[in-house]
Image 1 (cartoon, rainbow, N blue to C red):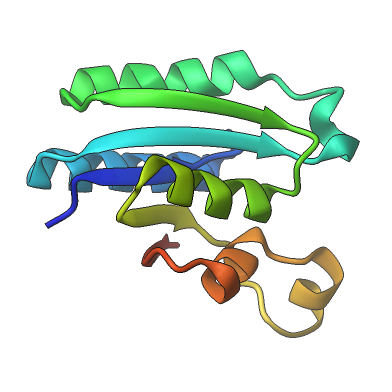
Image 2 (spheres, rainbow, N blue to C red; image 1 turned 90 degrees about the vertical axis):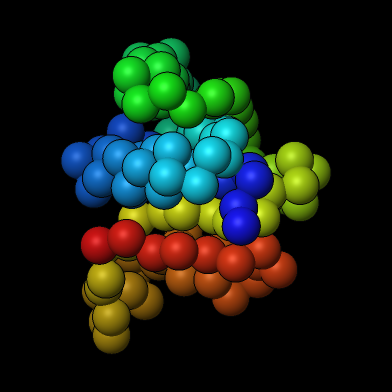
Length: 127
């Protein structure tokens, strides 16, 4: 069914749940994964990419899932996720969402909402 799953993360507790869910799905269907950490220019200076991606790669190794990690800076995260899914030929994106709605979503924005709106690749959202 799925051969290549893209899993975006930012290292947060919520994102780690999305990584775990994506890895479990990948293991169950025999898919490989690409884990992406994309940060726009405002946060790129303080980003700790290595530890976040190492954590995801170690979780994939423990699960027995083939994993590639991708680090992107100075790109809006939703654009990086969508472009990477297309470039890598991913057939599913698995990501987390806080489930914000109304005014909080308008004020904070939502990478997940933007990916859902613009991606041509199917998206599985974990909460």
